[in-house]
Length: 129
Image (cartoon, rainbow, N blue to C red; front, side, top):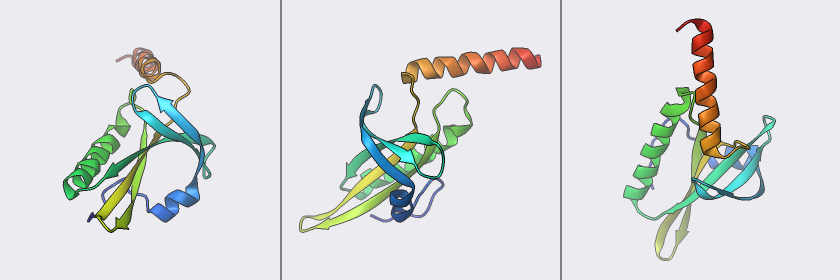
């Protein structure tokens, strides 16, 4: 699978050094994920693992990650920390494990988004917008 290095890409070696698996986690929106500890900061992240087998699927994942990284400036969305991937060569061809790294929130995601929207409105009112 070929890729340039768009924003948000984390080399697989840096990923394995930075994040430590805590446990599997079932997110209401993302489904099966993994909860990881960020060794560089006092926070946890969610990692969504996907298996891709074609260049088209790989390109779609890259495009999705680029879109998610653009949403980082929107206060009501959880932050997208980046992505990485590793290619596994087999006798049937290449398969790629793709990892999306996202902000972990203790709340249900819907409640968290609603809370952030409320806080954003309060700030706007406070600032006189």
